[in-house]
Structure formats: structure tokens, C-alpha cells
Length: 99
Image 1: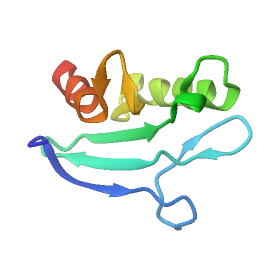
Image 2 (image 1 turned 45 degrees about the vertical axis):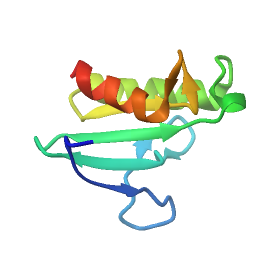
Image 3 (image 1 turned 60 degrees about the vertical axis):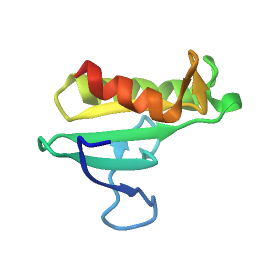
Image 4 (image 1 turned 90 degrees about the horizontal axis):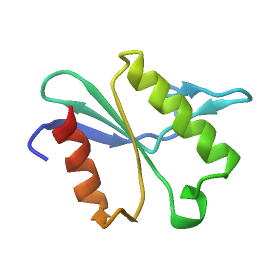
């Protein structure tokens, strides 16, 4: 995407990894991007089995990410291989278009 300055795979065991707090441990989203306007865009990927509502860990990660976004931390998106007829690329583009 032309709005992305750079992105990286967020490695949970790295000492400089980006994380968000959960009730019992840290949440390390899969990808972190810096947008050209200076904002941070955090992306968590979930496969179909883990993306379904009612999966406690997934629901908690989604809630934490959305709260972080609402508090002004940056942008958060939980993507799936296909969601609402949109591919991963289309989900990312739609999120960026809304903000």
C-alpha cells in the first residue's frame, strides 16, 4: 500500500517486539507497520478456526487491540484469509480507507 512507509513481522521473543497487555500475558500482534503520516498500524492474522467469535483468546486480543486503537495508540486490525468477501489485501486497504 502506498500509505505504508515500512512494515515488519513482529517476533514475540525479540526484546524490542511490540506488545499489548492482556489479562494473563502479553499480546504480540503479527505485524507492525509505520504509515507515512507517522501512525502505527498493527495487524493480527487469524485463521478461520481461530477467528470465530467465542474463542476466548481471540476475543480478548481483538478487544485489547480495539481499545488500544480507540485510546489513540494507532490503528488495529484483525485480518482473516477471507472476511466478508474481502481478501487480506482488501481488508487492509478498507481499514486504511476508513481512517
